[in-house]
Length: 144
Image (cartoon, rainbow, N blue to C red; front, side, top):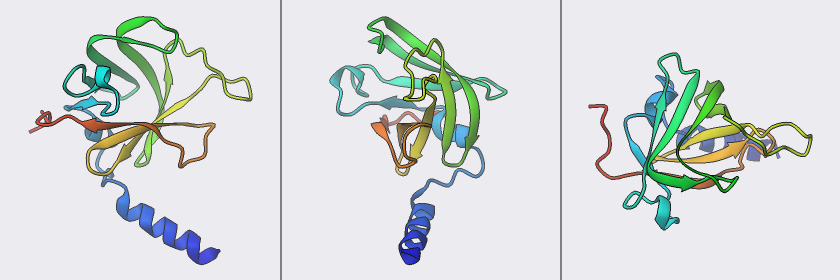
């Protein structure tokens, strides 16, 4: 079993994007889409991710309104950034009403995936938990 753990750790190290410089750079200055959802795809309604200068706030913005989990429509949603490291950015959604099994508000983790993708995890899920894989939309790197 020890060998398996070492192999997994080594594999993970080589598949995680090189984010030592700044994980925020991975997400900003790009547009993102949800490839398996026509309404939120790169072609129909991609989104941008913008962090405040102090990296304490983040806003996701769409061109067209999107339906939230409470069935309301909005073109943006904000989060408080709680912590971050090279594995992801942990954040609390404004107005979050969903609760964990322990009765605490859900805390989200924005997780980078190699090859210009990301997904969502939660602090109450296993660390490998990852849903809603988004892709970087073509020709949307504005950082150069």
